[in-house]
Structures are given as C-alpha cells and as structure tokens.
Image (cartoon, rainbow, N blue to C red; front, top):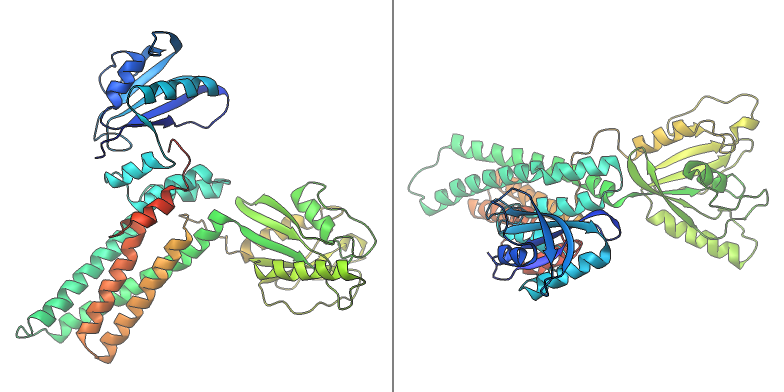
Length: 435
C-alpha cells in the first residue's frame, strides 16, 4: 500500500453527460466526505451535493465507495460522478487536492493495481491496449490479454521450468542420490514441451504486435498503373491526385484504414522506372524504396492492358492487375494475383480478402502483444534451445540448470519482473491520466 492519496478524472476529457473522478489511497474516504458529505456503505451509490471548502455547491451527482482490497487499485477507492463540464471537473479535482489528495500521474491507478497484486504486468498493459484499440479485432484481442489468459499460460510455463530446475539442481546437489534415466528423460521431454509452447507463443505474439501497432501495406508499380486511384478506392476518399500523366505522384501518401477489422496503413508511392525524368521524380522513387523497407506487404500494381515488368521486391507481395474493365476477357488468376478495376470497384473485395490472408489474419488473434513481449519470448526460446542441446549432448546438468534459470527470468519479465523500476516507469507512462 502507498501512503499518498491520488485524484484524477477517469473519464475522457471534453464535454458530455457524465464525468467520473476517481480517488484512491488511504485518505480517499476522508477526501470524498469533505466533497460529498458522509458516504453510504461500500458499493452503494449515494446522491450527493458536491461542495467546495467555502460551502458553495459545485454540482449534484453520485458518489460510491469501494473499500480495500475489493477495488480496482486494491486500496480504498471513491468515484464521484458529476456532469461532464471540463471546468467543473477541474474545480472538483482542485478541491480534492485542497483536501489532501494529489493529482495522479499517468497510469498511476493501474500501476497501484499492479503493485497491490490485483493484476499482473501483462494485464496492466492490456488495460492500456483496450483503451487505445482502434478496431473490433483489437478490442477483442486486448480483452483477451486483460482477462489473464496470456498471463495464465506464461505462469504455467514458468511453473514447469521451476519444477524442472528443482529436479536438475537436486541432482547436482545430491549426486549420491542416483537419478534414473527414466526421470531424466521425463524432464528432457518436459523442457521440449515448453520450448514448443514458447515457439507457438512467439509466433502469436509477433502477430499480436502487428494487430496492436498496425500493418504497413505499400503500393508500388510502374507510372500510370493506377496506384493512386487504387488508394482512393480502398480508402473511399479522394486523397491522391490522379491523372493520365505518368509521374503525378511524387511523394508517399499515407492513410490509415480499418481493413477487415485490423488497422492497415496504406502507402501510395511514386511510380518506379529505370530512368526518372528529373530530380523530383528520382527523390519520389527513393522515398518509395524507403517505404518498401518498412512494409508488411507490398501491392505491385500493373496496368492490365499492358505488358509491364518491375524490379524484384524482396517482400511478401500481391500482384494487382488494374484496369481490368478495359479487357475483353479477364484471364485466370494465379496464386497471389488479383484483377481489379480501381475505377469501377470490380475485384476490390477479392483484393481486401487476399490482403488479410497474406497478412496472416485468417485466424482470430486472441491477444495483443508488445514488442517487449516478443523480445522476452525470443530470449526464453534461445535459453530453452540451449537447455535441450545441453541435455541431449550430455555436456553437464550445470549448463541445463543455468539455461532454465535464464529462461525463467526472461518469462518473468512479461508478468512480474524481479527488478522492474525502470520498466514500470516506461510502461505506465504510456497510460492516460486517470487510468
């Protein structure tokens, strides 16, 4: 428990019907009663007048008390519900500070929930991800993390590694107690099982990072293939200037779309050809190649009425043959190809479906992940791979025990780091004030 009492608006800034002000800490009840009078028993709302220190009524609203430890933060918590006027909210918060509270730092309520063992670190990050989620899939995936499923799986793996460590280190500490080959083989199989789990989790986490942060889909192709028209058609906005004159697009144009339930940044680039006409077009092509380096997927757009080629691209690609409405007959599509008309909309549904398949989003994503989760899982994977090799090569149980300890510490960083002051400061600074 912490000694200070904190206060902050818990609802979004701006005008609305209701705003919620949250107070947490040992003096929260006293602060709230200074503002609202005597409160009801825990979990019961009370209609109240919210007054300042001069006895003036600021507003009428509702107030409710959540007694420790049965609250979001694990501390005594009070929520004051007032009308959604930003100036009014500021006045009530200022009165709370005058009564002994201080304004909460970003993420401090959730940080206290973590420190008071109400949630683990991965669940705390799930709170922030749920607030920031931009699509339905991201909302569902963030809730999956917040619900504790990911944490439960990681903690089960940690428990298994601890059990294996206990056995291996006991064999080292008490060599006179002979360990049967059958017991050692069982431990080896368990380590392999956990390595398989980590590899599967790592694959899912990498996908979860992209769902959280968004995918970059870059449109490239020869000049006048209809790239800008395709961008406008997919975004359903007139964002890029289109013209029959080759080289109209000089700079990269970016737009964020909700494509099939995931955030996709679509990037229209300058046309690529061997001999640019001038320095401006050359710079546009340079920026196009720079965008390609960051791309999750590349749409190579060609004019279906022409025989066109383009330099090879070392990325996952979809060949998009545009202007198919000008063809007498649309040819059969190969794998990773689609015929569209950006002008009429023909084939765009097929293109969106293929984009989602290429991004690996055919299956439901059950959690959102952060890049630090990926790093931790990669470290654990390397540690367990070393443990398996040491086990199979018979180079010594000391190396197995060391690798298992390192793997356990790597996984612990995801849910509850052993030493975490800097890490906690970085994570909770991303939260909004009031959460």
